[in-house]
Image 1 (cartoon, one colour):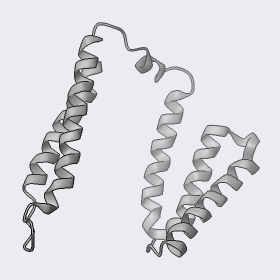
Image 2 (image 1 turned 90 degrees about the horizontal axis):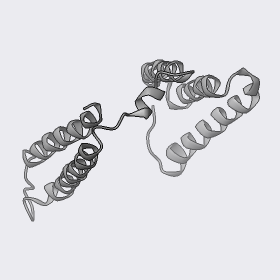
Image 3 (image 1 turned 60 degrees about the vertical axis):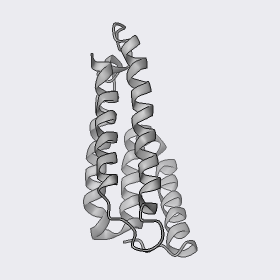
Length: 147
């Protein structure tokens, strides 16, 4: 039954998304339903795909889920918890020190967790270069305001 939790969550989420979509305000000019078309399409697509996913998982419900067992073996629990902690710290620092510096710190920490200390030069270079390219692309080339 563990296999059915994810598709059920997505079906519920898709249904709530559709309800909220149809409660959006209507356009005052032109077609009053125009703002609803794209979000409704996404919601309908999500529900349909989730139902297909549910049916597939229902057929395999008696089989054991080896992937879930793998989550609790070896280094995997550490990687999951460390990633969640780093994401929390990143979200806390993002508004306070800005996109560029918080992203450099986040990626450096994440790469050290995944790759270890032996590849420290590679970890730092990837974090700095990726963060700078992302910042430059959005802030300078696309003129998107970043914190």
